[in-house]
Image (cartoon, rainbow, N blue to C red; front, side):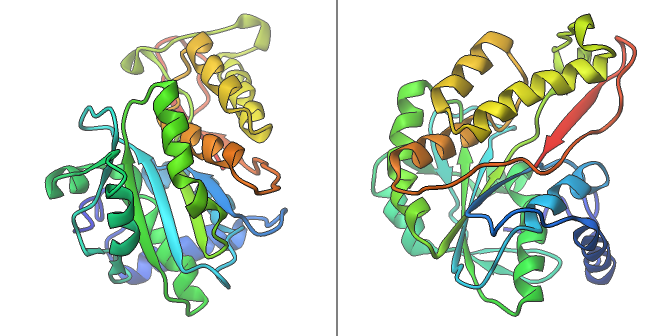
Length: 281
């Protein structure tokens, strides 16, 4: 799979990209123990890389052999999860090998299909995580492979089923999970303009709305998070990857804490005709 968004959503040249990622990672604070899983945004790096770096700052590559990346489908409508046909994902830092053993195991459950290479390359939510992942492993001289998963529109029963499928992979200490998601997409172009004046300016209302959802994620409440989405209609594009992760965590034997370490917005909306996207890690 080619790095189809390199040169537009992020830099294509190796050295400038490496320098920029190093700057963002060096500027991020490591405030928690090593992450078993992380949530990271997937917008263009000029908008979201600072927030993403705070997530990747918490990756300890020592024992990790495989990285699962779960990202939402933006371009095609699917009601299940899709797997890559490719053997490698290209990056400006070199290729990443895909773990065909795990991919075939997932496919054998009957709950997945293989996406076309075109759909794979058109989707940005998976690709935008890849340079960061490659960078943090290369910096430690560690080899790894990857399992990218495109997540479609899921009902509550499907979320529970996928949580059960991914549970053993989440429990495996040699696996890291990356959940690709932006948070609120606010504005007329996103068809979402919910505003509570009691929270202050529009951007403050957006943050309050996002933090309600973030608190539910921190409390690992998959049902509560799904109810929040139904109630508020918040435009969190990675709602289903997040839900799968919360479901897998709930069904697992892991004893973990979940904590957000950074939040930002692409701009501070003060007028109703403005727009913004929120990012959390």
